[in-house]
Image 1 (cartoon, rainbow, N blue to C red):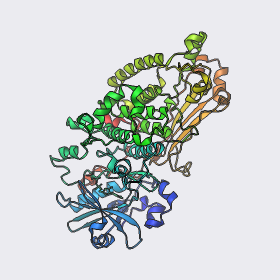
Image 2: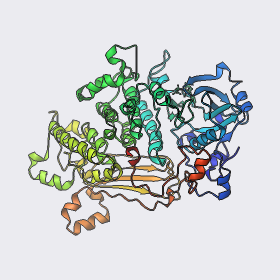
Image 3: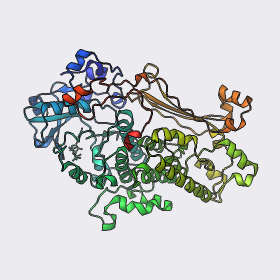
Image 4: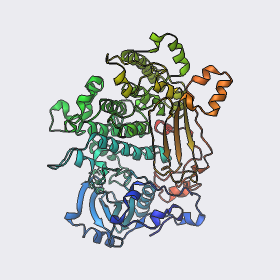
Length: 594
Ligand SMILES: Nc1ncnc2c1ncn2[C@@H]1O[C@H](COP(=O)(O)OP(=O)(O)OP(=O)(O)O)[C@@H](O)[C@H]1O
């Protein structure tokens, strides 16, 4: 076994032995050390930081690839369940089809790329074997089966997945995808996201498999590869792919939308047993997307209506965003992830917290969700103007919708005008957020009025909380936050004496991205805010304040860095996934627009 010393985390130097794996450890992401500047000697003998197996070891692990160990067969080969003799660890051994075999160097380069992708929501590559004409990949074994096993192919007596579990699965899958899109530089496009590629452990914790395997699949690189992929992912492929256009990260967002739709409806992406008009799930859902009153009717009957109306409305709204025909109109997966985080949190009354719209990097998601009970945020200066006349300070939901529609239209136009600048635009977009009338959180609504007309005063609790809002994107050093290795989030909507806050510590990324959103009430003004007030900058003082801090990114030198090795990489068959991290990444999602 050859490991990069610089990639060797405690975990990899002492691999857990299968069943002995500590549950908590398994779900707790331990990012590989950021140390990326490799010694010259190490570069010369670059080997994947995973175990190399000889064929005999894997044959004995899988009882000679016996039928009883066969987990299934996919487009790239057969997958067997095995037990490593040396450690007792359970593994899934993928025996790649022999036709379209790669040379050893090429195969190793792909394995090297794959091995560098590490996230708790991705099935971990443990090792590989390149023996003679055999090419095998060894992955951690995920014990709970795949998502379709639980969603569609239930055994008699098997309990259906409840709503919250479905949202948690969606959130976890979004985290895995977000890692590939946003934490790996340049982004990795999944290309083959579908329910069958979401594996679940015994606690329904989701892990994506088959990521980054495109270059290893038989036929990769030949002219037929593109079309055969369409067939494999039939029902999940984004329209641009079937049009023969290039895939982007937004194509993955589309596929993710299909999975989300499956989770909500309990229907398969393609089901030929259904009447013609219902066979294609997205085609069936499109007319319903345009009629929000029908959203709750889309729910899987097995849920027996055990979900909140706001929960399903927001989930369907997110789904329809992901399934937009135009890639640029689809949200970033990071925004989908933020929204799903809220939907996957249990609350006492079962109603998910409203998602504060300024949580999003891109405005489109804010607009979509603000229609379905999310906490909108209006610059206070505008509220004051509205507040002069009490009657104008409140608006009915239909008025809200009209205004939002207007802003959605203008947003769409903005997007078209500047679809190449989305990273900086997302910041800009938030700064220039069109005011949307405030809505009360659902909990206060229900008690406030029985008339059904949703009204919100500019000085209600949630508004007060929202009056001063800071967003900080900062890149924190590994040392500072090494204890916060998993994305953590907290949210609360409390009285105006308290502050609303939630934090995302994306410490699972090589960049250790940390995003913090604090929505402070007046009572909790920071010193800075108070100073501003004293200075009499009234308008500014009450406006939503956005602060984006990109601190020193010296840590952007990541484990992917190969420095000046580009040429060497090419020569040695360096794969497409093995790319150099640029020292500065200004534009978060520009890659998908390139
Ligand atoms: N790491 C793993 N742990 C447990 N089961 C796995 C693992 N990887 C794959 N499987 C199972 O092995 C079977 C075959 O998987 P594979 O990924 O090759 O095919 P697929 O996803 O069904 O199809 P395709 O590769 O064409 O997308 C599936 O049933 C899958 O759930």
